[in-house]
Image 1 (tube, each protein chain N blue to C red):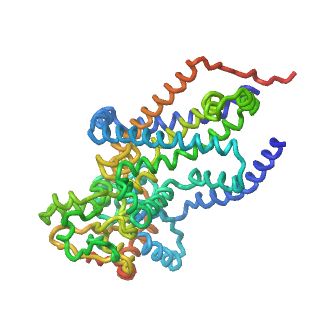
Image 2: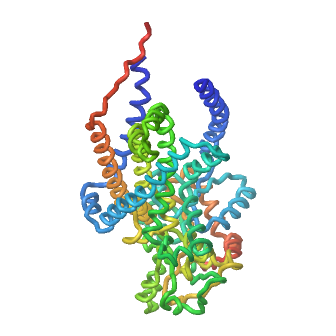
Image 3: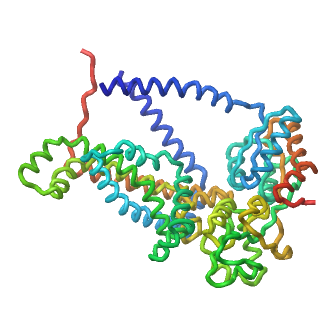
Length: 258
Length: 267
């Protein structure tokens, strides 16, 4: 009978899901854990660092990875969270305006470069190549992405803005999206983070951009005033800004801020 | 017992209303009004409607034809194919988008498609393809169940009476399964309107070019502009709610018998 089969199926599902739901909710209820909001572009070094921090301090840290602006919105809406590590100081400044930052320190620089697929049809040798007719260029959305904003400054300062914009076939919401397009050869070039190209050196090449054309985004760590365990939060933030942490970031292609 | 069973309905209804209300109170009316008139919002609304219409015009014939075949024919590997067709339903849309990007991008089909003038990556057409990919399995699922629920006796009678297979489909099976198929089509359309991940990966998030309402919501949320983001979301919800209500009224008005079954009472 289909009915009894249906019931049996539901019973099995409940048996499987309930213990799972139980352990899930106990993990969710880990209120003593520190909550770190981290920009998604910083994932690899942050995961390595947090593991080290947990081993050294015995404290537990939950990490929330997403776009920095989205994380800021998440914090402002919930009021929960201890430490914020966005890909740009821009977001920490915004939170400072709202009196939501107890302590902040620069960590590393988020430097833009021109990334291109090494196996691409088009050879990119200089920044000016981005203006070559027929090239497929990708940029970040200037409002949603820190590097999208930087890219606009670069375009303006380079004097090639109109020609590069004419070559721009796509705007992305995150820098990883642009990197994916580069890796798959759907774009000839894109303005991405140095760290992203560095982490994919075997497939991607880079051209440096004149540093006088932009102000680099500074990855900044901040202790949030919504934190209910300020001392522990400061310990975590201090660790992320410490020289050994900066060195770890360096291994992933980030340049020191100081 | 009737009252007790109504509680879940009431609870969930209140939850949905609560979510919408919580969004509404986030924006002040002035902000909502200026967002409603902003070029970006209007573009995103028009683009969303156009893309979903394009996606549905591909998904409806594809979905109904596939479902009809699946419901009427047995062939080796049918169960496997049936499960395969469900995969897009369980795929996170972002992954569906990444898969489509790999398939339609420069690596595989991109070059041949481009030669045919069918540039799908980073184009509005790509958004249509992504949404059709999401919508078609929903239509297949509903239409297949609908065709299977049609009494085969009607079809046999029609064939005995000498109707051609095409006329059997259009004059017997399709009308009899029509209401359930329509319900599936509406569900699929609603999904395309809210679709985000697949569209984002295939078409990109280029403002005023491939920007659907959900992408507008995401871009503004990502830049911390909650007011504009929520306003765009409310536009999306209002338009979809309006269309869904109209469709239900239309379906009710076309002589459909309203059946309210009696509540089972213990003797």
